[in-house]
Image (cartoon, rainbow, N blue to C red; front, side, top):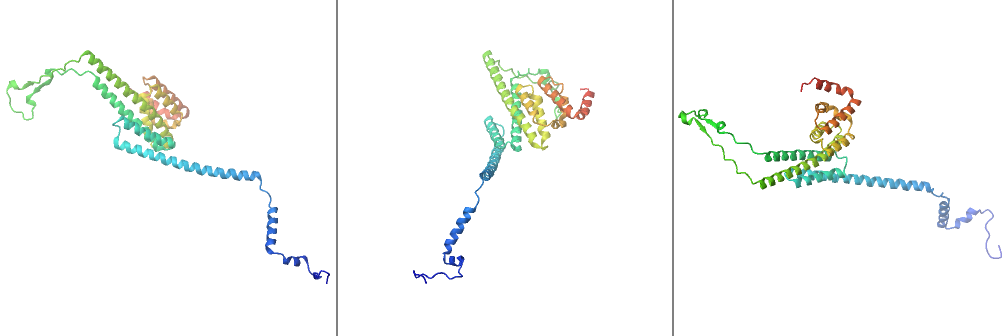
Amino acid sequence: ATSGGTTPAPAGTTLAGANQNVNPMQQLSALSVTTTNATPPINSAAFSLMTSTSLSTSSQVVNQREQRLRQLISKCYLRIGSWQHEMFGMTDDIILTEIMKNYEHAWTYDDSNYKAWNAYAVLNYDAVSYFKQRVQELSRISQPQQTPLSPSTLTVDATMSPTRQPQSPSSQQQQIPPPPPPPPLPPQQQQQNLDASNEAYRLLTQKMIHCTIPAVKGLFKSIVLSKAKHCLQNTLRLLTLWFEYGQYREVYDAITEGNKTVPVEVWLHVLPQLIARIDSPRPLVHQLIRHLLIDVGRQHPQALIYPLVVASKSVV
């Protein structure tokens, strides 16, 4: 016994036994503090790598969503243009411009959309044919009327009638009098009509060339994206525009730039058509054909042998 009345610990008692009287929550708190202090700090480089990886993944997800959305918008514009083309056709220049804008929006939102490029190219190709037909009609109308046939050429033989009824000799030949010629227009009116016809011809020709350039660009892009799908048909369309309007400088430049985007093998199937136009009287068309045949001959000389032999033996 001590003077303070406190009973000392027995002789065999250890420190662990003395700690049994400590609160368990205090022990847990002390253990957690010790564990936390023992954790090593996170490396800044590793943290930066984790952050950049997370941002890169998020950016890829956003880009994929944006790409899918652009593809959907492209399909919508393509469908709207197809509906307008089926409903209205090319009877009105305003409707034709609206259809072209929808197709143009379609390949603008998705540059790899083959259907959009092909529809855009074919529409412009058909528009060129449409304006060409209008130009020909205008030229035919503006030509002077033919001289009426003489009465001798309009003689009708009554014996050639199906009934073959006997008639008197005086009525066997009947002459149909020619129609009276239209009264001549005043010189001022004639000049006004001529000026109006020339202006309409100029506007139609300008529209025709304006549609030829996007048709050439669209056909080249369709050939690149087609992967041998409808490639020959678009190549033949391209040759038609080439031979018809290649003498215009704008069309010539578009064809020259487009040739750089397609492989030479595209022209192997149309070598006879190219060789047939090698003597074209149009200088720019002849120059393009000559350069293209030289490029083909450098890579595929054997492909030119048979068409050249056939052309050399032709009498035409």
